[in-house]
Length: 215
Image (cartoon, rainbow, N blue to C red; front, top):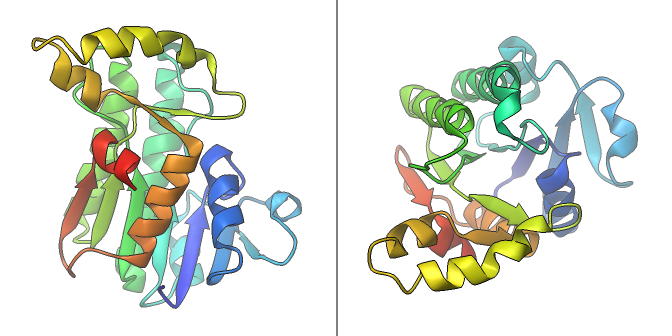
């Protein structure tokens, strides 16, 4: 495991699950907005700062850290296109800039499966985030789930029969696999494995839905 793991979005849907899995395994720091410390599990360190300020983020990071960036708009849908720019993209731009300044060892980013026929504004914001990480020259792991099933996020279970049929049809099989559903447990395991086993320095690794499930 790396010497220190710094997590943005640590009090969100994915962040809480990841914190629960890492709290006994490493020196974990939750980077949270003002007032967010109260939502961090007891026993874990929290640093309150402006998560959209690259200078503040860089001051909280150190060379050799692993940064896991999980900030995003809750329950994304097409009506939230402006938030995808002001929250999702703005936060990763700041975090990638800060990570490069601090000389972190590994940047882990949750993007989204792509290309996709829907949620174009969301996909574009996440694609731009990936590009920013590459432009910053960071060693990175980028995970591309489509939808993460878990508490409060269960309605897509109704679509499982459709996925089953699509996976059997040659014309749409690849799309069904790329845009498949993953569980919160699968995402948490994939994130933990990515943290524990970074790619070679100076490279970027992509984990699509099949790789996330395999974790």
